[in-house]
Image 1 (cartoon, rainbow, N blue to C red):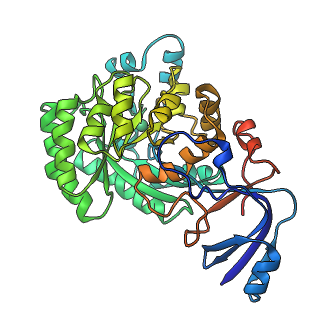
Image 2 (image 1 turned 180 degrees about the vertical axis):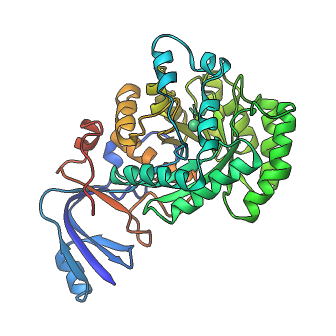
Length: 401
Ligand code: NIG
Ligand code: FE
């Protein structure tokens, strides 16, 4: 059914902008006092009421009262929101001076969440995930990538991935699953890191493929997790099996983003420790650089060099990394606004990073803009000036459609 919705004070379709490099706010197309014509939840066009009503007299009209700015739904291309338990204890330890890696070495960290997630039933995981996805949706995020990685055995990773699939039927947000069985060497695995990765390749990924549980594979490249050399072999084999690959890269030490660019990963995420040399490699590649300001805030550490990455010509996306350890807050808009202020990003760069550039990190074509033919996935903010959205640093929330 054809629908005409409006008027909107400003519509930012975010179309016609380059995928890589810096953006100025003057490049943003701002359509004023316009209406959206959609058909079966796909956008046909944006224009004035007079013209659209004349051309489409049968369209059902929904009138919006008050100032509204319209943006495409946000895309959070990196989360770990399928988990049980919490890590308030880690947070308290970090705030009193212990480091993330020290806590992990002392037996806390990711393994704590693995224990809690293994103990939870699939139904409990579905329930927790749906709640978090619905909260994200109410805050303007309509597509959410969700990683496994708190199961760390064939059976437990499958439980997590099946929970993500099941949850995708129970939330209106779109969930994109990623297998992160290579999050760390599980403490109960008898063998080396390479043997564990071989086990994932041989015994887990074929089932993931057969059951269509995920099309993406991730690995944490870091001291204490997996070394770049070991990760290279794993990622190449995962690619040969037909998975898109992505890397947790340069969070504390370098090596990960270089590997990501070399192996043709769709994205390299974190980048807090990324150096100028890596920035150049990423900028030359098709690998999307994903900044995770929520992890910097959660760990009290520096942000990814977002400004430098854009200036060098990289494609920069911004994601929440929502997880129980390093990024428990999960407020993507607030985090993106704060990153923008710290790294001197234009509103155009921030919104691009939350929409069509994040879609590129997930290789989703046709998402993250309000172009003709794309799903009518938009959120409206109660203001007459799009700049107020970042200015309010997350406190100006979209209204439910
Ligand atoms: O992206 N760095 C590795 N993985 C997650 C954290 C997961 C956790 O601490 O539970 C991250 O920050
Ligand atoms: Fe992460």
